[in-house]
Image (spheres, rainbow, N blue to C red):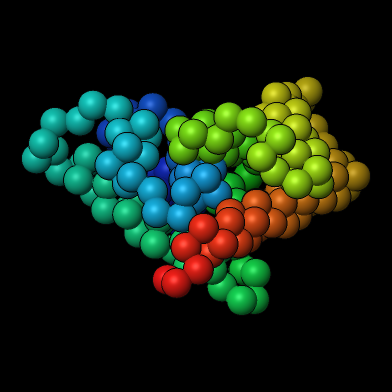
Length: 183
């Protein structure tokens, strides 16, 4: 199911501050920093200042709300079905790589919005993952020509990010449960 394009189109129609990949990255970063996020804060960072009653902004907000519920469901799913929201494989490797960099940048920003300031708060393997995400956020595709090796590398990066995000999310849930064992 392609949910990237409809969300991206809704964001484009309202001149959002970012595309669907970045918006999803911020959401995931916030979910990994806080189990319950401030949806209004997230939407404000994605859409900017919008006029109340703007039909296109309302539609984009509805799509973002659905994306939040969908993402939360996927992160909590026992079958580990979470995946970063990125353009489908029909898009060029250039476009997909740029979107992955934006997603990672959004993820780091989202974690920062939730007050994550020190990598030392995470186990060593997750510290390394976050440092890798910093590197991926600066990824710059050289040209639009690609080969099978580029596709394989891209897919490996997606899988690495997917698993790393789920690990951080689970680590955060563990801390939340330890902090409030009676809930």
